[in-house]
Image (cartoon, rainbow, N blue to C red; front, side):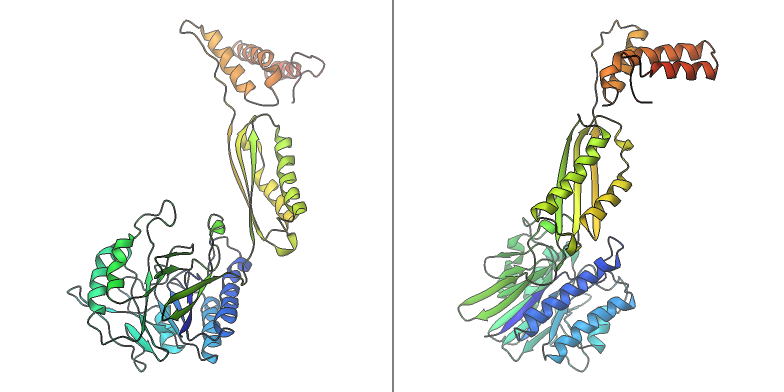
Length: 427
């Protein structure tokens, strides 16, 4: 019974957080998954359903990571079959790509069906000398079909691909097709996904294992469509997705696809703090620190693992939201948590007050209520808001009377006189 490893969305060279250690995580995940679930399991072949790389333009060290992994599999006698994804496909008008380079020099079997000027698709058998082709028949009894990155044209192209498949010579017992595209209903807010009915022509053409990539969350549909998800989480949102690699056995009675997740991945933790508008600035900072400390004490957060951590502060605050020094707090929390990267998401609104005013209200009344609302919205001034609002009106009048800066400053000092219980407040 043929066995293979299905990988997708590896994204070597990932650099979203501009952190070399984080970029190295994607290589370590690939290397560990290959060693555990391809070499140790002695699979017949490995497939990569698109996005081996994060970028079309590569740094030498990223190309070397791919070479090292291909060499490991080559030394174990395990062929690697791949297609291009939207991240690593050749730029428009270009005749080559880094995947093509790996095919020509490092043993990667890059399957690319030919598209004629008429739009017709031609599947040529893999040519070991030319190192090109659209499909390959392996000795283990499996035919593997490739595809390109079709983007928004994918629904229309599928019927053309299915027609081309049906013109091929008789297939071995099993047919696997690699296809890089999303399927409708798997993740929220994803535009341009295929419907299940769009893919049925491929099943009718003889494909009994459709190896998908592109969506970074694992799913399987109707026992013949499989998507393992990305090897590593590319964002904090994706950290909540179940993902991994598929170790697949093609049996006469059906497909056994096991999602494997026990390989190197950096841990993620998402924390949340809700502000209710009553807390002072210092109390918010103290609560943020306490949230991280609680996660450490409970064992959720293990500083020795240098995890990726996000703390989301949301809700309402009773002070100007810009008064919180988020950069300083983020650094403090990163040191406390031992995180490789600490993401502080500060998404709060300042408490707003709006006193009702009649249409006949005088300018003085409007002025007083505006000042009162502004002061009441600030947690530090709320209790003394009426007295301070009158003080601001008086200050304005003094300024209009042409009083000197010295007089104005002395008035403000008196306004915040700590010995006056009516106006006591911070300077």
